[in-house]
Length: 361
Image (cartoon, rainbow, N blue to C red):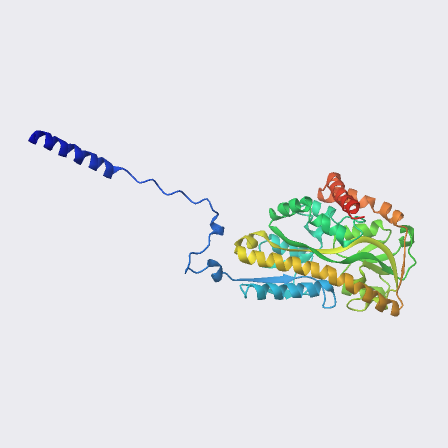
């Protein structure tokens, strides 16, 4: 009996030792992205220690809606992030603008810009095609395309080039021919020099409209008109009514409406990725709100501007839109050849516009 009890005790000890040697199962690894982790109760939010100063530059002056929207945006972002993202706005061409502004983003500066979409075409060619001439007749058509999968894919491709598009809705009307000439067809612009912006697409479009484009800044343009170097420019109602009082120099607007006057808001993709998610959301919301505010405000203000221009002797005339549309067809070929876009892309964009028109009468 003693031998049996001893054997039983020995076996019990063996089993106990084996049980102690087993390892507990490892806890499951979390599959949640690190950036989505929330601080535990009582812990500080890492975003509270994040601060970023951004310079925001474009060419516009205080009388223009793009300036007003840019100023509003800088203030909103700074206030709504409680100063964690400080945006300082520089208008009137004080810092880099146009292609130089895009280069700032590509190089990863703490930078924000508001520029015409074709200036991104050196990086992704379809950026020029989305504002090809004679595409849109309303802001609503343009917005429909901007909110499409086509443009979402375009934004993704620009992000690969370190260009993060924040918003595409900063529009201020349509561009027409402003001169002292009687313009009804492209033939009426033959032999006449008009100011063009630094956008190659705009200059090419003006050339196809029949004029000889002369690239220069808008301030220089007003002096050039007075000196007889150019005979006008292509621009929106707000441009004609804006700084420098260009309506004192040119009195006739031929309603070609050949290009939508729009700008895209952007910053470097790599800088964007450093910003905590909660501040990204604030920036996105502010960007969209200010873009739509500009569209709506400018549209409402245009009637007031037109009355002021009429009182100062400005007149408007309809043109042969079919003739101008036909004249602009070579611009599509040029975009394909110059930037590597495609006719398929153009057809997709036209189909989106047609889809909007079919669904909205």
